[in-house]
Length: 370
Image 1 (cartoon, rainbow, N blue to C red):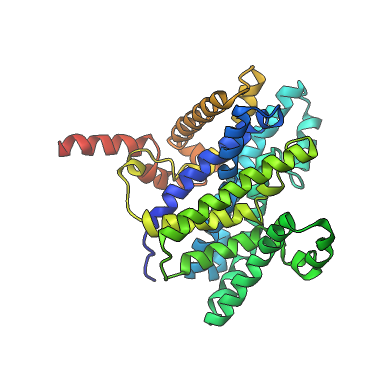
Image 2 (cartoon, rainbow, N blue to C red; image 1 turned 45 degrees about the vertical axis):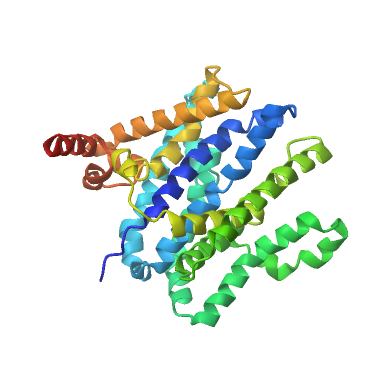
């Protein structure tokens, strides 16, 4: 079986998505304050940042559905699922221990109850993504086999079905409430598997499989226009309801999925080249553990008074959080017993892609070349 070529534009999208997720959680508090010039800047950046989750699902969708290995259940059970389940378990324990510390509750009974609860509810709010992704992975052989067996018309039909929830939500934002009776059709609601994220997952495969190039003169203005609608719509809804309203920032359907899809195509067509930066600063291989760690670290920062109040605070906290997560994960990935459970990567893979062993090897080779 021929090995698939590395998809370089996914590297850039992963970095953007990872930074965006940290920003989203750092800015959540200030956005619920008064509307002022800082608020408008934060709202604009948040409208872009909310593409992070759709982008993550789109990339996973393309990689899984396009891979012939996805049809092999043994690959799923022995290789792919452990890379998600074990890090989730490890970081769930960290999140639980941190929540127990905050509550000053260190009893074994509390630990047991919290661990039991994590089987049903994420121990930290951001971990919902892992629960959803694992569930989609479990049915990925069925999805991949079914979609790949379709002809061109069949794949177009699947694309239309996957897009329907987003089309419905976009229409809802512009039409009067009286039109809801015509929009909230039961069959569309039932298409929103896994909170609608399965549709985004499938859209990623469709986008990645498109061979026809779309002009940047269409894509870039379209991205700006959709982003503008999200930003202005969020502002108007917030003023209307008297509190921060995220109706236009829905991560599973609507404008954010549309913006994510346009960004996906822009990067696919323009940035599918290897970068020296991504080789020297291996953020991409560490994006999953950074995601798992970042919100726990934010909680720690907030608990000692490092709380953002304006856009500069938010950007600084986002940067500091990213750097701390990056260096901690890079270091943990260098400790063989902890590597897999913290990052989902075998130690040998970490040595070849992202940990300190990798960096020292790169520095050594750079000196030899010079």
